[in-house]
Structure formats: structure tokens, C-alpha cells
Length: 393
Image (cartoon, rainbow, N blue to C red; front, side, top):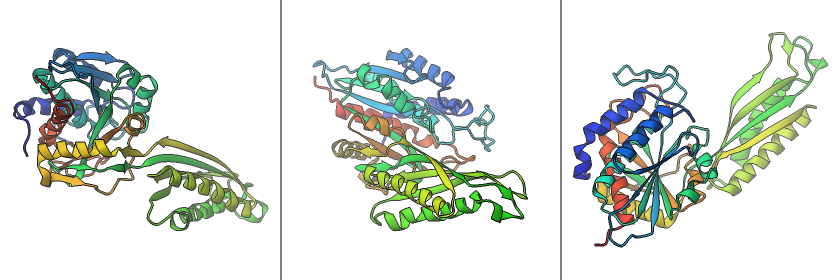
């Protein structure tokens, strides 16, 4: 895999950083140790550091060495947080924090951006400004949204922003680029079904919310199968059912909870309206009522065309044209980098990591980041900066 030689020189050092982060995972808005290490390294390399955005966020600012003082600025983003899950690996760098684990590779994302920052601080072979964004709380807590709301792009104006995520389903050393939606919007819902409690042996004296809830679960499947254009995507999944406390008591209420995934706002609007309509009408048919709480959380991650073509060109220079995967199918997973792309043009790419020692998908208790791709990702970041902000003597 063609990588920048100087970055290859400190692969062992990057591996040590990554494994240290992995052994000390910190979850949303609690990345105190991680952000402290990131800030200290950036300062050590002469990069201006701003701390506190989004609570534990870190932004490093580096100006290039070009004589013309190009006024263009771009941003690169890595997420730092871990997951609330118990690791099942037994290697030396396994998590030392019970119930917390870097099960999505954010330890690797942080390390690859640090590697690029170190190289760029040494060489400054670009003309303009790059902001290195180390973001907290990607895993469901919206750290990107918080940073944006607290003035990320007011404090650090940029023309475009770029993100990257490891992808265990792709071969190590490949990079996937896609214009348009690449990750889905993620909504959540709670449907409280209210009936009338009764003795389990005498159901005719009540209105059974369990039966009503079961019909709602089944009916909700028609939103995708019969209301959504087959050429447009949506997922409606009921993932929790809560209710009841005894074998012989029909409860008064049951709560259904779940997730909705879509790529387009029009489809998102249709699904939400359909969910409300189906749940309400189904309950009414049985004489029950519903209370619906529908929350739009992460929007879809939508890459802009010009920046994605550019990202693909840079990727081809780093890994070779045959190693770039163009227009892969989007994922119904979600990513809060979407909040940054809602404010600025940019592109979010996937970097393949299959073939590592823990060959499984993310969010698995046996997952580990493949350290062999650290210099690949760092080289991509560095090359992207040097290409987007070319130095003119």
C-alpha cells in the first residue's frame, strides 16, 4: 500500500498511541484522558490548540509554510469516544475500564488524524490553514452537533470539512467514496399503548394493550413494504416491548420503542407520518389510545459532489486507483458527522481494515482496530491537505 515514507517511519509510534487509547476507553463527553493526550501531542508539535468545544472536544490549528499565505482553510475530523459495552478480547491492550470498549475504532480514527497532524507540523508543505477536529460523543450523543452549536465553524471558518471511518467489510488499504447519502438518518420512537387492565383469566373486562401493541408492531411493517417507493430506502424496527408485571394480570399500558432509518428528508417525513397514522388508527380499532414520542436524532450523512470527487482523487493517489471503491451502497448506520456536513461542503469516506487480528464488524465485543492501516489513513489525511492547500513557492 503506497503511503508517505515519513508517516511510515512512525507507524510503531502510532500503534502505541492507538493501543493506549484502546486500553483506556472513555465514553460520551467523558473523554478527559483522551482529549488531554491529544491536546498535549498537538502542542508538543507546535500546533495551536483550542479545548472545550462540546465539553471535551479539541481543535488543533496549523498554518502551512507557503509564502503566499493562502487564505483557504479546511477541517479534518476524528471521533474520540468509546462504547458502553464489555470487551471480550484478552490481548495486552484490552480495555481496563469495565463496561467500556473501543468497539467502533474511534481509537484508530484519533490516531490516524494525530499521525497526519505530526507529519504536517513537521513538513508544512501546504499553503493555508488546516483545523484538526477531535470530536467527543459520536456514539448516540451528538458531539458533532454540540460542537457546531457552540460555534465550531464560527471560531474556525472553513470552506470544507472531511471525515473518515474504518470499515471491516472492506479489504485493508481500500478507501470507499460516494457522492450523496452514505449513512442514514437515525430517528427513535416510543409508542405508549394505553388500554384497560384486567385479570388475565377475564380479558373481556379490559382492553388488552399487549394485543393492541402486537397488532401495531405488525402494521408498522406496511410503512416500508407498502408506503415506501421500492427504489428508495427506509427501515422501521421495533426493538423493545415493555409492559406487564404478573402472569395473570393484563396491564393497563405497554410501550413499544424502536428506530427508523432513512436517507432522504421526504422519505423521513412520510415514515414519521405513517407511523403516527398506523399506530393511532390501529389502537382506535381496539378501543385503545396511544401516546407517540418521535425524535429525529442524527440526520443523513450526505456528501457533496465536488468534495467527494476530490476525496476520491486523493485516495487514488494514496492507495492506487484499483483500491478505491466508488459509489458503494450506503449504510443504514448513522453518523453525527452529518451535522458538520449540514453546515459545510465535504466528504466522509470509509477506509477498509479487513484482515486484522480481530476480523469482525464494529460494535462487536471481539472487535479491534487493524493497526496496519494507521499509516494509510494518516497518509490520506496528509495528502488531502497538501492537495487541497497546494504550496506555491
